[in-house]
Length: 100
Image 1 (cartoon, helix red, strand yellow):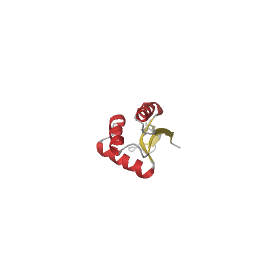
Image 2 (cartoon, rainbow, N blue to C red):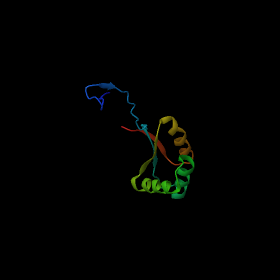
Image 3 (cartoon, one colour):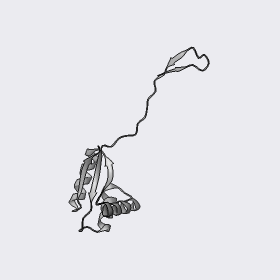
Image 4 (cartoon, helix red, strand yellow):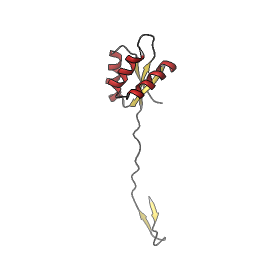
């Protein structure tokens, strides 16, 4: 990038600027609503497997219940896959979707 020197506007200097970007996480971990699992079990699962706080897990559980599914976490596929498997092992339906 070229900028003008403030002391002498006729002089231009080349300066390299590194832009910091927020990491993009191209996948969602979806948890699906069902009529089998209790709120407490889903909340406990989100706390233990996803590292959610109690309040965050409670909010996710309510959204799952009312919307039918909810993206409880965004990350890379490699990080979400073991969490998805662990949630499914607890007989709670979870899937991974790519963010369009």
